[in-house]
Length: 316
Image (cartoon, rainbow, N blue to C red; front, side):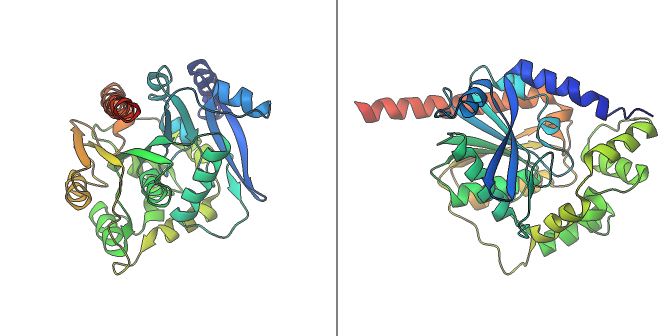
């Protein structure tokens, strides 16, 4: 029987190419390869072994835990490519990205992502991180402040402490992060969707079954990623980020509630702004894609306008 999710992939790939991005495998180091959807000109330059410098400000879209890059950001890509060089990575053990390293930490994901971007000629960028991708984005901004100029974070936190993990899973009625994020059954898939969205949606069981078969590969490695994500309450510290950070949230997010965003804003200081979108949950970028894309584009326009003015003042 045909997998309904699998047969949609060629269509999505075609739509991404029409929007101006193409897939490219980048060897980070021997044994570690990451897939990136990159601007067409970057793809051509990289294949021709010429310097693949982006000709527009670079925006990097980092996915969450339940789906790979273009599935997560399918509704945002076309709205960005006119004004920005858009890069959509698949983090390790998602999509075609793989490593033989035993390191499962978000630090390692951030290191590999930064190395891949540099190989693609990206010297500075704005990183947009959702959920798990937001935690990787925070790590990358902390480790590579010259690479990451600004951040947009949705449905994420600075770090998953054991107390936050326990409290969140208990509140949602799951035994562990793996129980929530790596469902093994149609019922588990439905439960994940029900806590991730504001408006309850109905899909046939067949679609959930097909989604399970296509999207939840590398289960052992992904379970290890979740284990490595949780740190002790004694370990967290609040980095002093130099970047502008915009927290763009679903007002009804049940996984990381809007209170988490307000707490982070207080912790991160004056460089951080917050904006919520009504009638949307954790999957705000999929539930309210037009509103989310407008908010994202407004923020990007503001930071690049400010940067352009600062550059002119510096030259004069």
